[in-house]
Image (tube, rainbow, N blue to C red):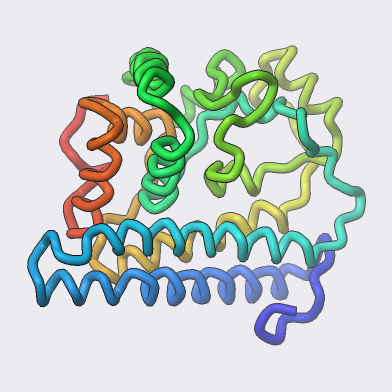
Length: 262
């Protein structure tokens, strides 16, 4: 049970789902803001460098807490029909998903922890090529050709950043793998894929909470395609790029909003 909301089912009454999504978003906003606020206050007292390291750690812990919370919510669900999604099912990994600053920076930290310099350089090369393919295309344009644009992190038949995957990926779901296969083989982006809206709604609520928490701290809050966000993190050297851009964002500088022609 979540703050007095009755046990979840699918599909729940619309009003119950609205209340639940709002509760989850407000909870995440408060938790995210409270996790970062001590570091922001410390910086105000001691200068821009003091406390910057612990604040990066606090950011990662806050995002991980949000992901864990979503997993706990999913564990409460009784879904009928059951999800067709399972390990090794990568049919949805041809979508160019959008993510928020906290998600992107958490992903950047994960890349530093799990990839050596050679793999990071290779990733930067592949990311730059993908971003070039996306250049000048609207979100709608990209959605219509998504089958030709596999995710950067689809490797060896699976997600190579699964613990750090964005909330859009966590909310994507299907109850019929056959429809997912048909959508990809036909390259028809308008194929109807039956899914459970409550799963997407909960992931969206957590993401909304991260955005609202960032905005409450006067930090840049918005969305960007993951490929473009990853390029911003990696260009010029991932080892310093991720750390510097994370620290800059925590100081109130733009991350997604840095001047760039896409």
